[in-house]
Image 1 (cartoon, rainbow, N blue to C red):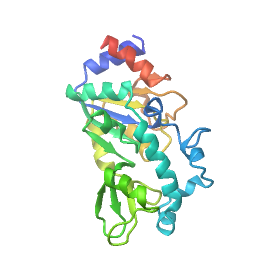
Image 2 (tube, rainbow, N blue to C red; image 1 turned 135 degrees about the horizontal axis):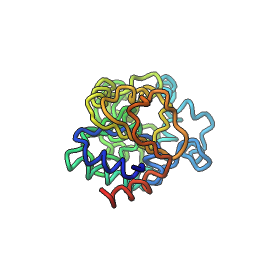
Image 3 (cartoon, helix red, strand yellow; image 1 turned 90 degrees about the horizontal axis):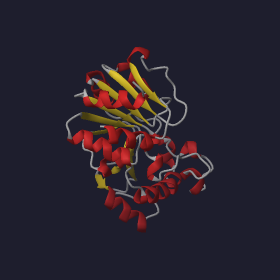
Image 4 (cartoon, one colour; image 1 turned 90 degrees about the vertical axis):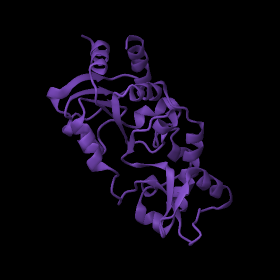
Length: 246
């Protein structure tokens, strides 16, 4: 069987699928990578991007982050979930996908309608005061950004999106590991598998593994005996063909 046939066979014969998605899932939605020539760092004219997600730096001076975040939110507002986001939703509705673990902070899986999403690096939907931990919705934060240079809580604390910064713990790691371990199929989409601890997750795979990614990846934590499909290809192009056969 070729990769298309193997993938269709595995999708039809799996009952507990976990998906791990990375930045490559979002590029076809119009979300450019951060560091490219047309990336968000460049468009926001940011000289020291490594400081953007440094929590200690954020606490001292949140201006740099919000210079980035304003540009990022504009990108998200215009982004439309891809064909593959929609195809995953279909599999979730069929009861096959039990969990989508995403490294992305754009919440496009939720925008597509998926409900079983674990954002290991957090996301933009929820926002909290770093002092009193009061919750602020996405819509409230957007309104605040229209009139406030740095959005603040009534207590005077700075509001921070629920994104994992350097110096903070990733989210739901134990739950993610268990989902991968319990699954009979792990589908890795658009991840180079180089950013830890998400890159460790394939090593916990309880079942077979499918990887679809355009570009190089690291196989260091991928159990060779469990890897059934590796497709170096555009994700949407591949899954449009899968959809026609499924």
